[in-house]
Length: 200
Image (cartoon, rainbow, N blue to C red; front, side, top):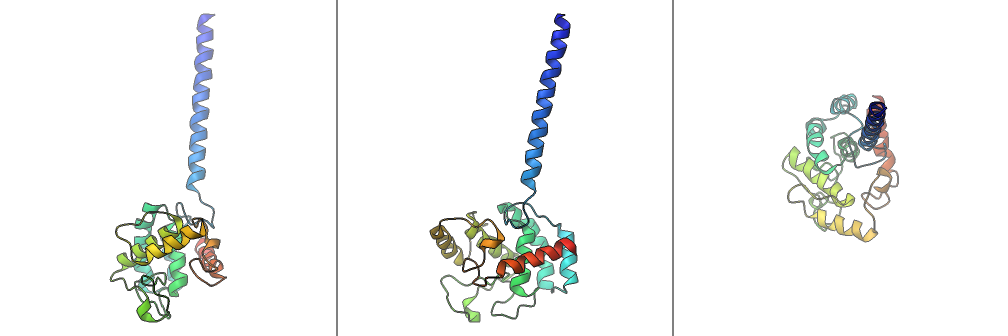
């Protein structure tokens, strides 16, 4: 009888441990999958899928060279690389630019306290890597994350402005309306690119 009791107790404990392990694994899996509108978290679209989409949109070499860098660097700050690539595609017209910003400024980031829209008001990173790092750091300013290395001057102004708003940006819908951009359809443009990545 004692033996049967020990066997039943062992089975009960094993079942409890297994259930706990399964619950933890499920929680980890749920944490690894982000909502499509969220900025923080793992990529929903693989680097290869994003590159295919970029080619389908005739993206320039500027975009194509930065995609692997985004996928390497953005996870260091738990920022979704596919969201940043989508934002860069919107900001640069798939790498064609056309506005006042120039390569390798991937997100129309201005210098320090510049308020104008002249070419001289925009940051001019020397390399693709420097441009991607600046973009990641700028998003880090809005999301409350630490920068990678020494950030660009505008980082501090963006961080202070976001702190004053009283919240950290967590989803794409919070980027428009004067936060990152004044365009009220800014978030929809980024979502459309992300949707294209998903279906393309």
